[in-house]
Length: 267
Image (cartoon, rainbow, N blue to C red; front, side, top):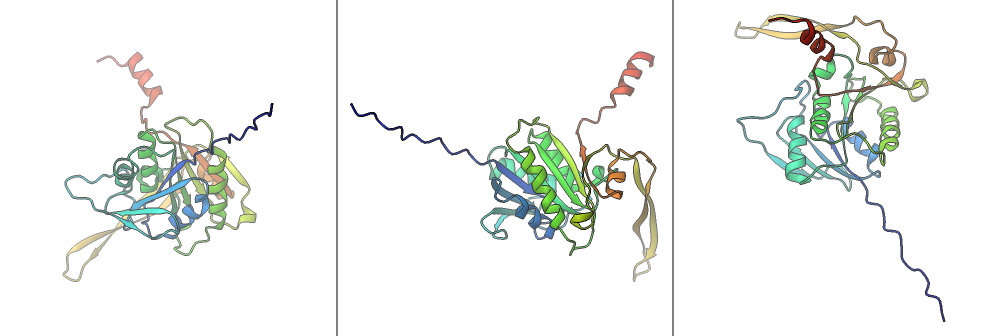
């Protein structure tokens, strides 16, 4: 009796769906470099603002219409641009484009730092946080360089290194990282350091000026000041040429103060 050969094949493993967005707009070099870093790691779908939305934080569009159109900007990658904020982009992607939740959301690569207090104002991190709220593991990436022609090669390397290390792992559904990459040549980057958020912020100054009609207007300026001398912060890591990785959460409850108030506050 002839023994039948086993011709069954192991089914191919389904590639993860990766949603990519940003706050600098769909034409920015940062998002193009993010796509290039991970495009072979899964099914990539880009949904990003049609113009720069820096500093929008967690803003959403209410009371105004939103438009969305498909664009051919990334070779072989489905991409859409919207008139909305970074958070709008995530919401639209889940509800109208993917019709479900991706396996991972990546936001960036932002032009400029999103360390310390910047995480509060950042459209980059708010998009990633929105994904986390929607139970989608997410990461925000930023390069500490505001130059439009910044060198993104080290960023692409570390984006791929971080994303590759996480794909296939069982991540918490609210997994959220804030990753900042120093603006130095690859050979000067010392590695990756998991940090806490520094207590550092801008000491702001509004410059008062007059327009051609003689009416006053104000221009926001300021100086970044680090009040935190700890060697375990994102600011310290970046100043010492490490890639900083800060685990972030959207639960803003101050648990220690909550316990103190429950115990001692008599009203």
